[in-house]
Amino acid sequence: MLTSLQKAPQDDRSSDQLQVTVMRAELAALIDRLTGGADGVHPTAVPRLALARASQMQHPVHAVYDPAFCVLAQGSKRVLLADEVYIYDTSQYLVVAQNLPVSGQVIDASPEAPYLGLKLSFDVKDIAAAALEFRFGEAAPARASSRGIYTGELSTAVLDPVLRLVKLLASPEDVPALAPLIVREILYRLLKSPDGWRLAQMAIVDSHSQRITQAISVLSRRFQEPLRVEALADEVHMSVSSLHHHFKAVTAMSPLQFQKQLRLQEARRIMISEHVDAATAGHRVGYESQSQFNREYSRFFGSPPARDVKRLRELQLGRVSG
Image (cartoon, rainbow, N blue to C red):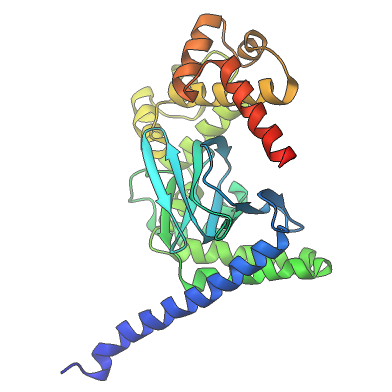
């Protein structure tokens, strides 16, 4: 026979799961109401907080994610980083710990049960400051560089401040004073979680992870320029072999592959938003060869630039007319 002490951990876990279910249902209702039942991404009065709604499965959306925390109140999503697949739903949250080019796709949504979620972006400086203040970074130096993206179990400790942050949107006058405190609490909870060291890594001065953060920042600012890996390694004070090893550990790709994805995503954005042709877009993002641009664009997005952009514009028109 089990004693009461033996039963307690399981009972606590069941209680937490029940609370998560109740809180998640409340969060779903809030997001549905605050988005007005309209599909799309909706910015809010809380800086860096966006709500999302989708009533059907979507095509993959390519984007460069800032460090961010994502929660789903309903539905599920697939995120691709290079060749790696991360699937998360209402039982998990997703953390992007570095600026990474990813592809996201809503895979579980319907008019009756729409996809409902939120994304809270973080400033890298805020992550580093919190990790150092709460001393979460002290356990990180012994660890090797790790992927800059991961999932974690959604608990009441994490979901409670998330729910309070969304509820705060009902009183915009309180946002400037209270939102930073709640965001800080969310960051604290993430750093305290079993995988929080992944976030804390970037707070360690002169650590490999912090240097990779710097390398990513350099590439993000200067992706149009020709890439000399030796120069990049010198700039972040690493050897070429160490840069390659730790860069791939964090991003799942080499610096050259990373730059290529940044270039292609920006070229696609330019063609759609500025209505320029493929030759102009390719040249603006750093391609000297039009044939190389077309070839790499087709391989990455699945169709040639002109055809891909035409399809995306038709999808946008369909959403507007719908």
